[in-house]
Image (tube, rainbow, N blue to C red):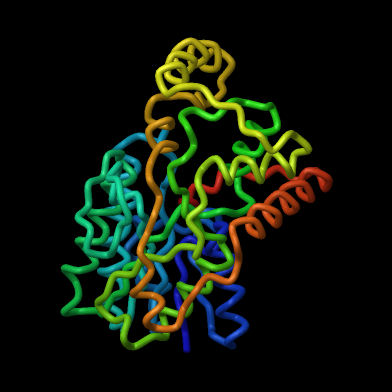
Length: 317
């Protein structure tokens, strides 16, 4: 069986390729880091030729990217993948979306919870889902709404670095933060690709536990050799800090971790109902503690080896 994987060199893409290879699948990798363009239909058609399925992971997730760039890659790029797939008569498409489509809604989300995106990235994922569904008469699809992914990328490197500086947590930290380890997400993607019952369906994929944000930070503080007790500041104080520190960080060319939109995402209730995935026998294998431990270990190994990773703009949620 021949499978095309877009975004194959990203954090999730590499793990998906690895797990597909373990099943003796023939893999066609497609990535901008290999000089391939998601906006090049001719190139995509060539890659899709003879494929039985496509796993579409490639996306711009950098909120600092222009809205036009995000739209072109995440929406127009997805349309190109769909056009290439249908023209080459590929049978199945797995589209990686995000729980970001729910925006700032509270409570536990299900696959039926309406979308309410706030950022350009989140809006692009909603549009991507719509496109995939519009093509269902031509190609069967599976949409995966992934929880925030834990893994050794630049996003978590920055988080660990911030925690190690004893930076206070904005808010009470009592909001649930249900995440997923990148190896579990890759496993779910491969599982759903081969599940006939997943055709033309949408699935929420996340880890089993619903720890509070404060619990996650406490674990990270412990791994960093700090007191497990998490210092906090009020939301208004955090945003005030963001205003003044943002000016300094901008002059230094550093991202503003206390920017208002970052704080809003930090305060989200990240809780998801996994009944649908459970019904088909899938559950995440890694606890959030194991995910954080392995991620920190891998990041430290990269540091010791002197490796510098570019921001994973293809696959991090």
